[in-house]
Length: 633
Image (tube, rainbow, N blue to C red; front, side, top):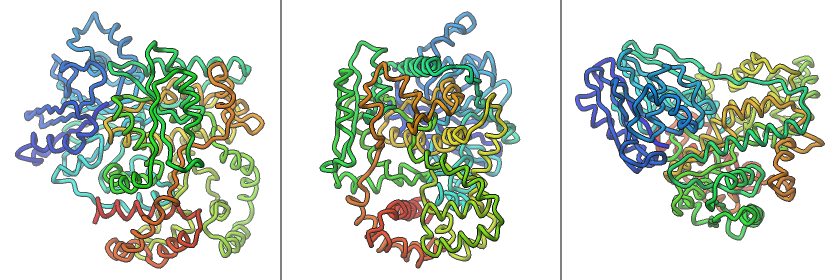
């Protein structure tokens, strides 16, 4: 796990001192790899690489980056290739290795197979390789989008980095707001690729590759797509075996490391399963980490985490977050999320990552992805139940739908029901994933007239349409259900841009690598291929996963009510958010000339009157005001 930077100057105008620029880029992402810092300079081709190292595999200097081969090719690599030992054995006859690192194996693999090397890799990665013979730069991002990669091409100079803030050290790159991205962000609280909230700075799609030559970006295309299998003839027990063996294999792969591997443990199904399967692959005590909120039992699951720790004899660490911790953390969140993410659960994840770091752990496994792959959210049941009615209602005459929407909006224009009526009136897709920020009706009111006029063609639903079209192109080899669509959207949209992004940024803010066994690409194909009838049984979410885990976990863990990472935001930070917004809102609206002051003031006052459902809106507004102040104004 590391941070990578670089630029390819086809204009010869970048700088008289490119080495210093690369060093400054490295400094901006020092937290991603505090163990070593390196640069590689090729003045002849005007290609410049930078790297910050978090030493995990081959801790010696031989594993340092940027790494150069005997052929003159060079690589900067962030992530892990979990099957690198298997690949290395196959390459030993042709390649003389000088390190024990997966980085060198990846470079050798590229030299043998070119871009086809990606098909051999099981891992999480973002990397750039300079191909001396072709005079080309080759970049790629892993299939699930676990490792970040940003790029920009301005005036003949191509630049890339693990984090956006690093790019701002290049004098020709200035932070400018992308208004269309802002429009979408206020719906989703996150952004799909290639959007980042900054003009001319783009986010790599998961599972994509790119080549860049002296004329600029030559190719940008997917190298992987989901491969659905037909399990219609399989019975429940057979699928249970496939799920258990597939997840076991994935966990075993992710144990590869030259430093100890720990786990975040909530006591829920997914994290508990990971701990159980980790323990099967080691004779050493696993370190597990859990977070609670002091004197807030309704937000704490520590008793369940302790049960799992005792069951599997882990070395368990806990921390209770206090109101003071939250106040201390709030200013840091804007620095961490240069690409914005409006999510208060960043608070516990930051502190659990810090807990791991303080107790000597660089690598942890997480349960990210289980709910999306196996339909594990109870609120999805409502969508599944209502979808047939929604589909029928959407076919009603438009004038009728407009009347119903308008009448309902008079009484409650910020409710999920009103949002559904808006979608139906426009014949939009019913399920948008976790679109938990401002509702479309509210969003139209909080922007001022000038902004709405400039962006009158912006349509957030286009994002969902893009994913829907991709889903419909797939061959599922069986009857398609609405659950299939929801799981697809969860994997393609929600996971890489929300959960995996959040995990990477908050872990790396503390120099901690997070690994997600559910995101193994072979396991993803398996999980998404499973017929929906096995995923939700008698209103029990992710039934097949739970049943497969009964051999290692007690029913008291598998079938308890799901809680997840919840934060006492209103109770502990409501006053802080309200007071900050109250003091700064007018100035913020004046300086941005984007928002309607009176409408945002109304949102603030609704929260102050005890309307709990406005807490998330208040948090998003607080985050956005501070983000603008840090990066735009």
